[in-house]
Length: 288
Image (cartoon, rainbow, N blue to C red; front, side, top):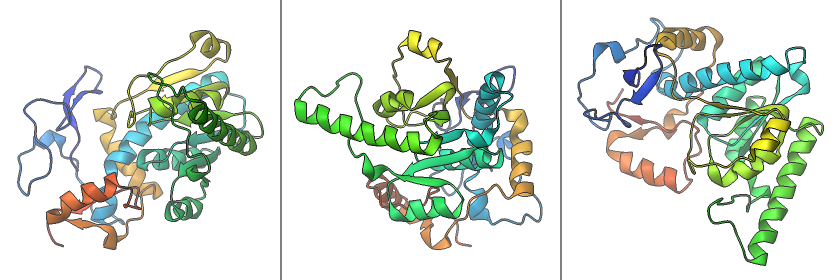
């Protein structure tokens, strides 16, 4: 497994990510490449799990690190609380799915959004409450260009009201204790409104927008903590891998959903158009 550490700080955390933002590195859309040996982490010998299952490791490694920090931050203010009385919620995605599995194991109530019947069924199979995002289709809100016409404003308010009603029901009226928000700007207004007091907004991505806005007085009064992480710590690589192997914290992968190397372009198109049901879309370089 390729560890994405092109440059690390003195504590081992990633500063620049291999093949993403690091100069003079290349991605993995090639059948042959060269990679520094210290970036290769072996799969456990005689692993109980398949290569396609391990191929989703990056989402899980990222989730492990983000959840570790977010959970500890929440606990600093709520150390005497029973997690079973509190809700961890996330906008849909593979990293969020992995984090919510950890949150569930820690005893929290867990729920996340999904936009298809297949994904809602998958969440149910994993013991995660699925929230159909089609129930609030107009929830996105561009903070730099908010809607001004009455119809758009009304549509947003209707969706926001339904979303907050759902959160209220799932949390017993308390709001979200830990909100995993890897979407960013267009959904951030709804994220903040859904938060519980002493809640944590945790972020390890910015899929739909990097710039978010806070009313700092409200965040202070509500004692909200904001966690921002990136990748994970190099020295934790083997630890996370071993936890996956030992605790079955690893995805199920349908072999029929794996794309061949020559179909990568089709995979990108299917993903962009929402035709990929898996939270972990994969392609194989070599035939098994």
